[in-house]
Structure formats: C-alpha cells, structure tokens
Amino acid sequence: MMMQLKGNRKYNPYRVCRLTLILSLAVSWSSAATAAEVYTWTDDDGTVHYSDTPRADGQMEAVEVEEIYRPGSVAGPAVPAEVPTVTPEASPETGAEVPLSAAEQRRQDIAGERSERREQQAEAERLCGLHRQRLEQMEPARRVFYTDDQGESVRMDDEQRMALIDESKAFLAKNCSD
Image 1 (spheres, rainbow, N blue to C red):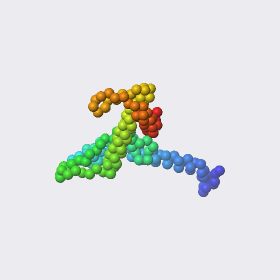
Image 2 (image 1 turned 90 degrees about the horizontal axis):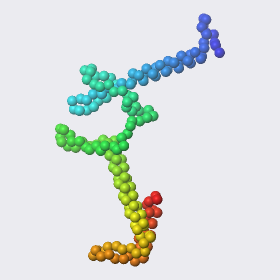
Image 3 (image 1 turned 90 degrees about the vertical axis):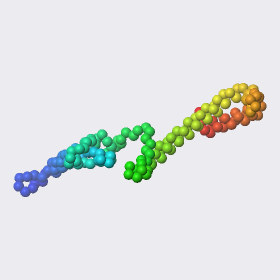
Image 4 (image 1 turned 45 degrees about the vertical axis):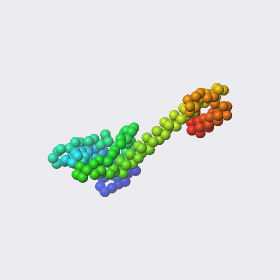
C-alpha cells in the first residue's frame, strides 16, 4: 500500500510506523538512563538531602535508582521483618520532644498491634497446652488428688473431675485448632 507524493517519493505507512516506534523507544531508554542517578548529601544540621542534580561544590554521593524503590515499579523495597521502633527525639535547641510524623506513628501502631497479636497467640497456645495436659491427667484416672489450701492431699470427687474435663474439652473446641 503505497501512495504517490510530490516528486518521486512514495509514502509508506509501515515505514513511518517503524520509524515512530524506534524513535519512541530511543527517547524512553535515554530518559531512563539520565534519570538513573540521584545525588545525596548531609548538611551541617544532619539533614539528608536527595536531588537529581549534583551540588556545585561536589560534596555529594551518587545513588543508583535501581538499588532503591521507584514509584510505579512492580517490586518494592525489601521490608525488614520487624519495623524498628522510632521514638520522638529531643530538639537540640529547646530540649522539647519533636512529635513523630504520621507515617512513623502509623508504623509504630502497626508494630504494636503485631506484637500484641503475637502475645495473645502465645497466651492462647499456653492455655491450650494446659487444658490438653489436664485432659491427659484426668480422663483416664478415676482417682484424682489435689493439694488444698492447708497443703493436704485431697481426693477430687467424680462430679468435680467431670466438670473440669468438660470445661477443658469446651475450651479446646472453642479456642484451639487441634
């Protein structure tokens, strides 16, 4: 499919499409290559700065963008298993505490909730173990002895023993996976 233009040139739409595609790829690759460097430096106050342009005095460090997370990319940064706890720092000028940022506060809240869930799970597993142990000891035995408040060994009657067995079975059915 060729059309005649002025003169001896012939218009080929496929050639134009290929040329446009090649130019688009070249531009996108070159812009990605130029945006790959980020510069960082720390000022006299200890604040870390990031920029895509180098400093005039040359006191900065180049960081490769491929090594850190870029917004819009599929793979995010490696997240540590446990988020470190950040506490408010005291301001060097006034000595007053500087409040946490919203993101730092949210991280602390999530870490606290995670820690609380782990503690609750550990406590539930401990209780499940105690109820299993109670069943192992009381179910097969007809005579169960316990130590009372005076330190004397007393035989538990069958009603008490069956009530404790039923209590342990109900707890295990409700709270334990086994």
